[in-house]
Amino acid sequence: MPTDSQTPPQSLDTLLAQLRADFPSLSAQFQSGARYLLDHPQDIAIHSMRKVAANAGVQPATLVRLSQSLGFDGWQGLRELFVEALRDGGSQPYARRARKVVKESGSSRMLAEMMEVQHHNLDALLASNADTLPRAADLLAAAPTVHVAGFRSCFPIAFTFHYIYRLFRSSVHLIRGDAGTLEMELRALTAKDAVLVAGFAPYSQESLRVATAAREAGCKVIALTDSTVAPIALEADCTLLFAIDSPSFFPSITAGIAMVEALVEQLLAKKGKGAIRALEQTEGQLHRTGAYVPARRG
Image (cartoon, rainbow, N blue to C red; front, side, top):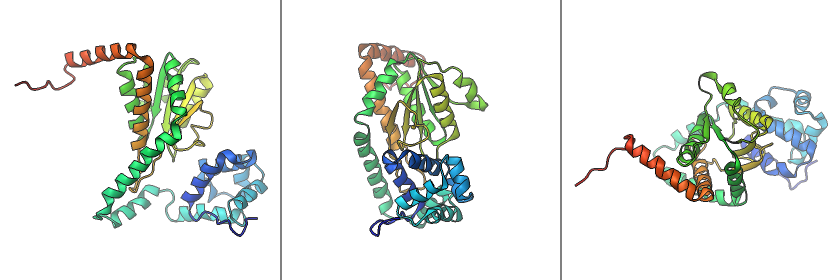
């Protein structure tokens, strides 16, 4: 039973955030239950506790004890947060946030609030990745071939990494999955390769498929994500974290872009003079082929 001083989370977002934060310290059984709650929130409101427990691979009593450890009297109190989110349009979180933005439109605080949150997201990068960023750079630099993937809103993150890294390294490939060809592209993964996968909640099926295929192929997997218990991070060799907080209706990718820029900077430094020569050749080719508008003279 919860103690008198323990207050349970009051919203689904708060509950899920607490589960992510507490995940490393949970028991194995609690982790199994928490993982299912995090990965399948849409199921909790529509399935019985017995069904949820079976899907999670735990006993129903485990879900009760997990709920109580979070401050609820039992499973029903925790489940009610999922029910309320579904009733309020839990399947449309962006639309729900958009209503708030529209309601506050014209506020002189909007730009200032956006910049404040973005600064916080960027500041968090150093604290979260001081040790893991060099590790990720080592894994990528050591691989003969690097593959990178990010889908939907995470595509700009993946594309930015691919574009700037490829300026001085040719063996970098972007996994796109155009026209349903994802499986075909995944066949190219080999045991010596490294795969960088970007994704944040709600996690796309494609990103999980890439991470799973990479692991099965024996690749080194680097997850760029919002949580250490994200589906793409659970079996990754290295996890880079970025915050997606935003006062707007859609999660921010600003810190994700900054993360890959910092990662490529480290990769450039590791390659040294070889990277400089490759960059010189690339820049020369771009200018010769007319990729850039010529500078005006005089």
